Length: 500
Image 1 (cartoon, rainbow, N blue to C red):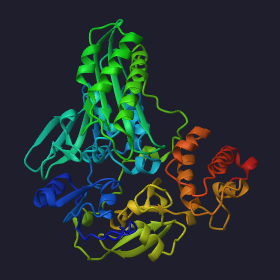
Image 2: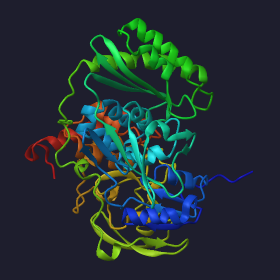
Image 3: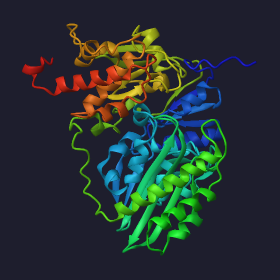
Image 4: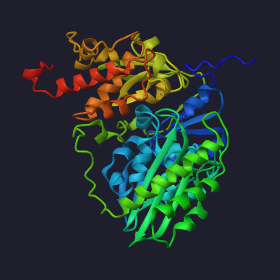
């Protein structure tokens, strides 16, 4: 019998490479070919390494390559950099206005921490049939920019997926961006997802897009995830819509056709029978949502007025500036150690790390900051949540060497220098939200990000934001009340709230 994987460490040794230019990154990927894996957000690669399912000779961290992140308008299109985070896509006013189904897909995407860490490029290159972003991108007719040292090419997102975990990427090739054409007038779209629990991989999902011409459907795309070996476009069901007047009877006909056209399987998440029923219902509902939206003018990209102007969202995609000596690619051999600088809770620390050291281990074992807890080790429980440059991240899925130069805040850094508790900490005490206490540090760090991002969160905001933090005592009601209580106190005038 094989021994159980220890998800708190990385067993497999590899060369760690950190290029600072796209040209350097492409050269390294060309040199190693299929023996290298690019590291972006790390939310899938680190899990695969921990579970010993991947054994690359080299890990190429592209996270500090400039120009690979951000959302910018182009001629009748938008370009999304491959390193753009799922959270940035979800909250971007232009994406919300012009591509609402994509924003909805990002909202349904895993947990808050994974949304901040995960990138659109990483999600696509994972090649999962259950991807949330892929159906929406295919529905909007997105194209992918692919580059290697010799050439660049553009490929339709629909043609990128070849099978479970298989994509059209060639050895040495890198996905650098996604091109989203501006939707035609009269376009309406919606994204729907059914999963076992919040933040889980889809049992089935659907991106529905219609183009309206009067009372008729001029064009449409029906794209589904987790119902075939790749994200699946139901072309036969689409043909039943085009040119016909929209009606509930037509939506019913198309929904049944789509449910028969997919090729689902039985697996641990669902059965083929259930997936067909889910697709039928999601198609019917999605068609009505898309049709209603097609009648509405595209709103101005105003964004969510509740977001704080000083939110970390405004600086999500900016990596720390590199000093001249850091411009060259960093190479760290297996087992080799080098010093890195971590700014933790406002204090500068120099620690020696190897390629496989994790930020979680360094915080606990080298800096004795044990408030950050070991949990699942694969990013599912949230117990190890810390803030890195103002963003909630999972310390179990961050290579320590990749955190060099970044600002880290742990639960020990919440209180004031004089020992005064942060309003969140005091609220957890006042509302008896601390039970066994194991999950509390992660809850506090995630909630701190929520209150920095949203000026006046609702209960739904709190539930959505904390969906990646599991409470082993199942006492979520008091936790939610504590976060709302802290938000109210922090929003009150200082003389009334006693806010420090």
